[in-house]
Image (cartoon, rainbow, N blue to C red; front, side, top):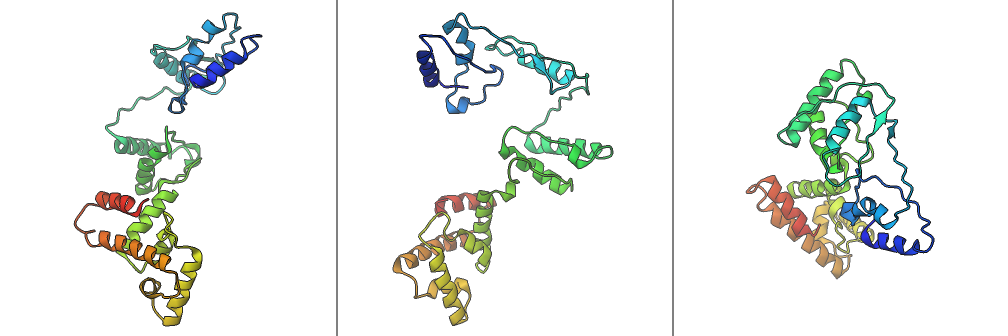
Length: 263
């Protein structure tokens, strides 16, 4: 998984002695998004003609049925070095192929499968694998609806991610200007120069005057003119969206929040 520049550098360094060791799998080149070039592995023997090749084909992880299905599928790739993985493990259960219309249909079918498995297995004995973190959302929503206990491993649940919490806080504050918890979360995200000391002054002002924090945002005279200007700009943006929140679908409001807030 090296890019072209890296390969040329390594090739140049090894020209004199040809003392080079390379490990790679042409069936698992996953860093294309970072510029990796699979040809570096496929054409390696052209540049290093005396290379001694060791093919690692013994698989210790998967059942024979999974390997057979994988081998038959990957064999159709046109640019690869031929290898045939084998295992000493048992055949295992057969592999099911389920055709789905979209991610919601997929999550529903997986949930239905899990509901059947729960009669024989604990929830902790069942796992769902997906390619990217963004795909967890459809599963989470269906599992919540069907009350299937679950944990997201190696990442946050969709609604626990910082950016999701931030946008939801914006929406909650737009709907309810007295939601101080949401206000505190977003008033300086992205940074607007409204720091903790300024917020402390506004809190103190609200206590002295016996008014809400939201009202104190408009009236506080113990903060700098720069902070006042930032607060006014922030509130104008919030009030602008609040004025038409019932006229558009939620997707439009979320998009406006992200764009107009600078998020």
